[in-house]
Each structure stands twice: as C-alpha cells, then as structure tokens.
Image (cartoon, rainbow, N blue to C red; front, side):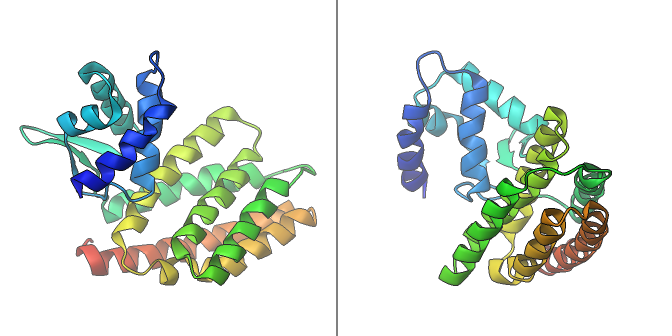
Length: 229
C-alpha cells in the first residue's frame, strides 16, 4: 500500500515547484484524501510523505496544520498525524452548516447562470450509466459546490468546499457508494430544473428536504458501519 500511494504522490511532484508553499502541498494531500488514497483512520508517515513529494519537514508540517484546521487530519499525542474518522455528531454539525450556507445561497436569488450546475448533473448521469458510483459522488460534490457559488461570495464558496471535503471522509467509510449516491441523481436534476426555471424559492425548499433525507440516511448507514451514535 505504501508503495502504491508513494508512487502516486511522487507523480504529484510536478504540481510542486521549488517555491512551493505549504498551501500547495495541502492541496495535493487534500485531493488524495478525498479520492480515498488515504482512508479515514490512516496514519500519515512524515518520512514517507516527504520522500514521495520531495519537500521539507517544515513544509509538510505546515500542510498538516492547515488540513487539521480544515478537519481532515488530527494529531494524536505520541502517535502521529491521522486522517480523521468522523463521528455521527460531526455529520449532524456538517449538515447544520450546509443548510445555512447552501440554502442561504438560494434565498432571494436573482436570475443567474446555472451552467456549472448543469455540467455537474450531466457528469453524474454519465457516471451512473457507467456504474462508477465514486464518480457520481464526485459529481454530487461539484453540484453542491456550484449551488454554494451562486451566493457570489468567496467566503461561502471556500467554506462549503471545506465542508464537502470533510463530508467525503464519511463517504469513504461506507461500503456501498451506489446505495449512498444513486437516489440523489434524480433529486439533483429536479433541483437543477427548478433553478433553471427561475424558481429559487421552490429549489430552496427542495434542498431543505434533500438535506433532511440525506442526513438521516447517512447517519443510519454510518452507525451501522461504525457503531456510531
């Protein structure tokens, strides 16, 4: 396993130039974490990561600090740095914040372009036809990011991007991505259709119901797998 991710990260060196910052290293690690290269509960070896990416100890530790602040990593005393394993309470909190930000993005929304949302919908449809449910999940994340972006606020967009990355940690624990993502392919399309028709109020109400259903489903599935309460 170490050889596998070491090879993949070595390929990421092209993304890091000599003046690379901890933020750019964090970008690489964040991407690999959300892809499932490093699963929740995995200990991250400083030595192996530094060798794979060709970076200094200080740069890596600063990247760790940034990702810990985002909720993706945690430092355990005398044990090292681990990819976080979220709790059911984390899930409830994530959905509470998503309701505020994503539903708020749709409130009193003027006529806007929904092409980015349409692109995410089409990507989900194509992935579902292929049976690539992980890719459906990725398209779902892009769909929700596009909704947040409608607020026209950099801070809202960045906050939701961090929330979705953290939520992906939950998805990675669950064994059946199809069961998790398939029901929302059609629901997302309906939301897109409401927005395309200019009915932001109905879209906001539908998104509220969406979050209620998704949170309940995720908590049930997560408790089954994790014994979480």
